[in-house]
Length: 274
Image (tube, rainbow, N blue to C red; front, side):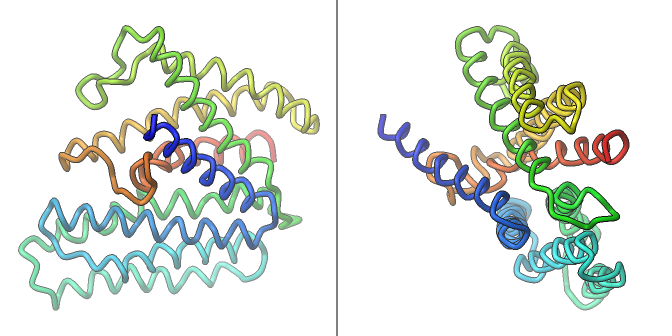
């Protein structure tokens, strides 16, 4: 019971911070998620250093991912042109050049771990800016797509947990995540699709079928993202990615579903809605 209330308190604060940062304005959104990029990269590189016996500078590479997020934000919001991406390209060059001076046992693996963090974490979180500023012409901040992405993920997770707990019989990927079931996946899908009708009601400018398709994409790709993080943790032989969020594990444990779901939602919104 103590752990339940701890999870509840942490979850409430987490949801409040995410929702308020999205709904207030573009500056609270960019500030909050810039911090999340750095914290997730810090956690990822710390895990790699500990379990793979390498020496990744998580300060430098964490700020590298932060630079990507800020650069994409400045581009898509219309504050600056795409030339602002050049500093991040310079960062990529310095990562390779630094290997000429460092005495790593396996420099190729070392660089691969660095770029794995950039591609797995920094890139999808930076691309959230494309959902925040979906219209390339107006460059105006639009919070609804961002909010729906997180709400769909949360409802899917909750629905999958409850359905799996009461009706789960058939394991989804027992080798990677033995507690996840097909019943849980479809239960989460059902509740998430049902919630899409609420978004269609409050945002009638976007057709209902768009919201239904987006909710399905978020559930499926969010589940894949969750499984990928489970695969990483199993490879590193750890239970949680960290202990920063009491009762919930680390930052990667909370944002893992977001990484692939972001790609899916951006593709759909850009191709079929905006």
